[in-house]
Amino acid sequence: MRKIQILIFVIAISISQLGWSQNPILKNSDPGFLYAADPAAEVYNGKVYVYCSHDQAGSTNFSGMQDYLVLESSDLKTWINHGVVLKPREYSWADGQMNAPDVAYKNGWYYFYFPFDKTHIGVAKSKSPVGPWEEAVTNKIATIFDPTVFVDDDGQAYIYGNDHKVRFAEGESHIYGAKLKDNMVELDGPWVRLTEEPVNEAVHVFKRHGVYYFHARVGRVTNYWMADSPLPQFASPKGLLATDAPQAPNHASAIEFNGAWYFFYHRGDVNNGSFHCRSACFDRMTFREDGTIEPISYTLTSNRPK
Image (tube, rainbow, N blue to C red; front, side, top):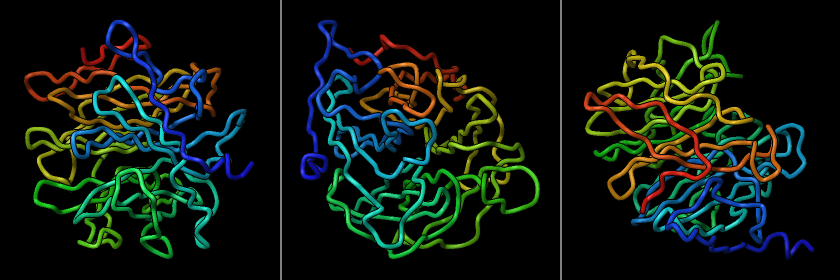
């Protein structure tokens, strides 16, 4: 039975006759179905890879989150489900609840950043975007909630998150960022507070036309900020990016792929899911002429690439 459980499921998910698929990405009718939450989307070598945390079927809380899966697509229509690719509990130093991850590429390696015990950040690495993954460290590299990593055009890497459950200072939680050293597993300086406004969790960062965008969950919605540097003091608040995801605490990421932008998120009202059994989805992201973003519209039959 264990051998069956650790097999990597490679499932090509069929597309509809109209030429695009429906949300969610994975359907509970698919072989090898898993609840895929906290989607961190990345584009590598002309393909989209979505790194997800894993909700256990039937969960009534998040304590069972302990491993990670990856989804892959070359066109956002047909998807490959690689199944669980990383089990950090197999490392002697990683245990506890494992929330939202992220992956970054630099110098020939893909670095998988995962929280263990909710806020301690561990790192695995691979020569392939889907693994196999090996330990890049033997202990936490930092303490932050919901880590996300961004590599800028000049090669400088940054790690971001918020101090929810950590509290770098007295009072409310905010978005923080720090430089990473070239080895991608050490901080290169202190954490810098990037927002005046408090946030709850689910930080993500991306760059478009030289502008840096920061978004995070604030209460039950996702808000965003804009800045002209990766570690601003402070980024300018721009308001609502997305309402609360259906039956789930939203956690999102954004990518550009084949000339269009997409917003990845999860929802709990599909696949016989729940608040603790979420499924990854994505929808189009539209920018106004001034660079601000039209609030995201959640769909089930989505405006996919045609």
